[in-house]
Image (cartoon, rainbow, N blue to C red; front, top):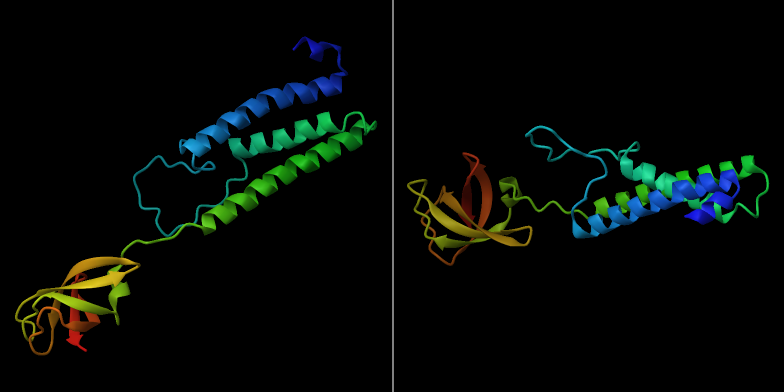
Length: 188
């Protein structure tokens, strides 16, 4: 690091920013690919249900600071000899740093679009067809079981009918849900 002592003070500042920032960026990247650092600043200190909420992109986060400083410092180093006016060099470096944060924002937005919610919700069974697994007794005198496919996976759920007995292997249609977990079905 002795070569830095003979450089122009502005170039020294860019190098002293670029070296630790690059090291931290590499560590963050390795941790991200290992799965140890999967968020962009969204941490909670409580037990709660955050399903259904869209956590906003954290503009002021450590990761974005590193992204900004990475673009800022390496742009300053790269264009130091080509741009003699330091004000223009700073403006270009700041613009590239902001561009790095913007690119990271776009990448994170695209990655979050890949997320798929495969949470089973019993309401999704309405009007679907199912196969009777355990016979269903006539008019609400007992429960049977059906196999139904929701989101590509099969579920075994309790079912009742408002009509006559339905035997195993029959195909039925779900018409309604009672008690939040029992399907009312009819023969097809």
